[in-house]
Image 1 (cartoon, rainbow, N blue to C red):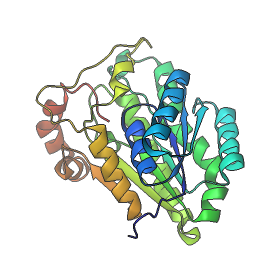
Image 2: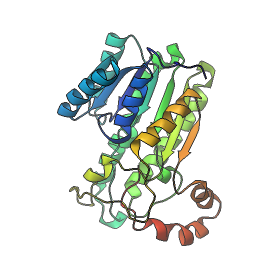
Image 3: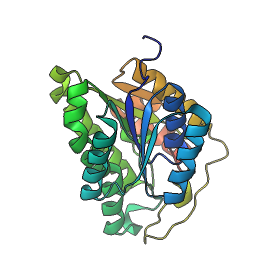
Length: 272
């Protein structure tokens, strides 16, 4: 792929102030992209915009946006298009998680996680769609290992990731003729801030740690892999350090998956 393919391209990143989102913002800024960062952390937005401008000279539009609010998503996308001329890449990265058994999880937790992880991506994509079609752009969706395989005590999170796959795999087919690429990304266990705000069954926050025996990727490494996948307009990028065997076992041999993988995952506090 040609060097500088993202030079002057407009890249929108939701949940862009921390973890993988922040690392992606830096990587695309280094490639010469013009950035629109969406997040709910106002102070972090200001700090990140300044850091990106100081380090890379990138043009950065930092917008407060709660992706679970459809009107807020509409307004944010309209402002990006108005101020930056259009959208070439939309990265649906914003997400939250929980750790609680299904029986102990209030339905409000399912609603909250679906509102952010699933509907947030749906809203932003809907309002960015026409500009992406006009520019033959691409949509990048941050999924998870749990988009392919069940993880214990993560029923709401897993459901949201399966929903993302159903939506965006279908959308990929619908956008094929318009030459808009859809890339689903499934990172494995990554050292991100998502676990610091993990919900439990009653809606309270309980920071979770990663199991000490699991190999953990850095946000920078994950962002680099996503960036390279974007240059190739990949359809699916599986970065799981549990690797492809878990995906194959879960789909083809579910009973073997339950015996082999679930005990290894039962102590894991957070993926992605």
